[in-house]
Image (tube, rainbow, N blue to C red; front, side, top):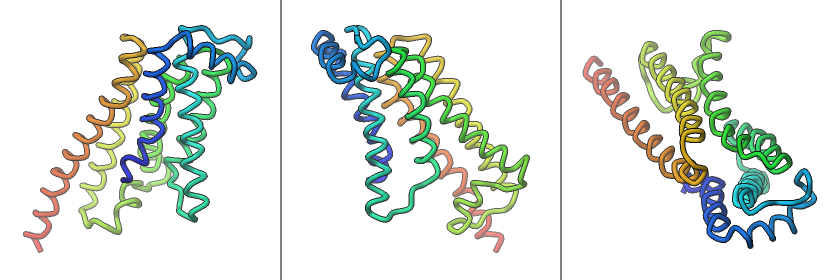
Length: 209
């Protein structure tokens, strides 16, 4: 359930884009009617309507996530706060300037911020963020925590690079597909690899004890 909750804005972005892409004229008319006051020039073309609608839906979905957690008195993870700020900035720029490059850069900026936080925590503050997040659940040697922190930082860095490659080497439609299925699949594969990596060290530690 948590995975679906985390992917909620991405899934709605995907659905909204596909529907708008299949009905460009209708999407342009509706986008002009409802977004005309939010976009520069007030007119939305058929070519950009799907992206603008999908971006607006993603913004609303992310705001709804935060509002839902606040109303339920739940803790909001820093990742979600950061994602909210970035989608408001880059999504807002996409809608206002009719420029889909901003929303395409959003995943990369988010991934690179995560990577910078992981590496900066170690280099600047001598704090291993992965250990702070998971230390109460796992007992690992210091060197393994360092490796885990570096692995996640590298993963986020590569994901940011891959996002830009897909965004500027293929069509927007291909990027939207990869944004949902490709990134989700790669993340699951990496999590499985991480579980295997940690299990080896947990077994070794148990044997040593």
